[in-house]
Amino acid sequence: MNNVHVVNHPLCCHNLSIIRDKNTSAEVFRNAIRRITYLLFYKATEDLELEDVVIETPLEKCNSKKLSNKNEIIIAPILRAGLIFSDIANEIMPYATVRHIGMYRDEQTLTPVWYYNKIPIEFNHPENKIILILDPMLATGNSAIDAIKLFTNKNVPQKNIRFVSLISAPEGLEKVQKAFPDVQIVTANIDKHLNEHGYICPGLGDAGDRIFNTVEN
Image (cartoon, rainbow, N blue to C red):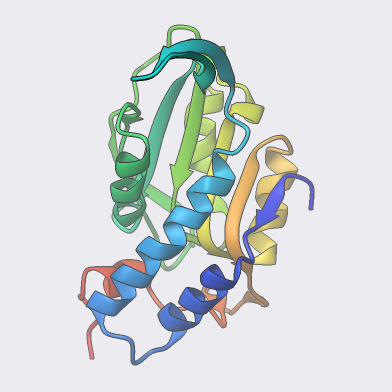
């Protein structure tokens, strides 16, 4: 698929096996996700614009590069599971702005229900915003599409938006790509399919419950 990037680094594959295991504890699950997240973010940010600068080292001046000052990076985790991604994003990009998105899936209709939105009504210079939407699971694609619309409706170009997930379903990927063909999607794996309840198979269960240790036995 165009603009879909699967990070199949050996360390990513190894830690994906850990988080799929139903017997993995919440602590080990969280740590494995963090290790995968670093790899996903390196991929999602590899084309950020740079500018030339002159740096003075303890020995002499030299030509170097840094992220362009004209762009503002916005980290947008979808609550609640996306929070574990934003922890790593803040560590890698402490200068970025964090804008939380609150939605959950109605289990009957499989449509997103909004409950929190702190995105500004409009952006100054939306063409200079780089958006990283964070959600561990891209399943039906409905939440992803609503989150992306939140920014495209404010005139942020599709090409400036990256959707970062742990695992994705082909059905959701197809739906998002059809709606927003220029949005980049970065994921650790494309799983087989969605089941009749809209869950990714083989998947890893409910990411939020496993991250926050709220799985009901």
